[in-house]
Length: 107
Image: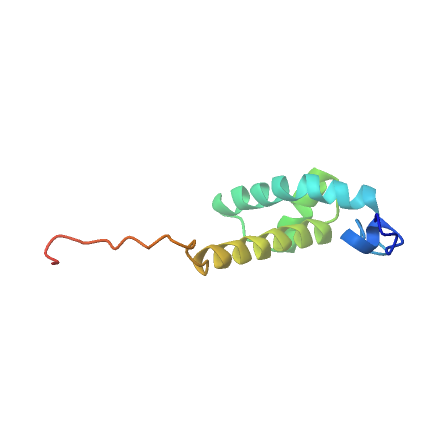
């Protein structure tokens, strides 16, 4: 910015919100996504199938449609899978060696 080569901070960091998205809606979704995921998981553990009726039920509890509840749930599931894959596929830090585990009977 000091060289006046960029017009705005958006050029440097990107838009804070994608075009067409509403701040209030995105903030609400961020706040309720984890509670929705936990509620669906709890109900599923209690024996309910993960289907449209469950999303409608949970969505109603949180004041959103079943479709929104479903989208938020699956978005979190997708992020969780990506996080686990990143963890599994991570590279060791430079200078750190993986410890080998020896079990009894091995030399």
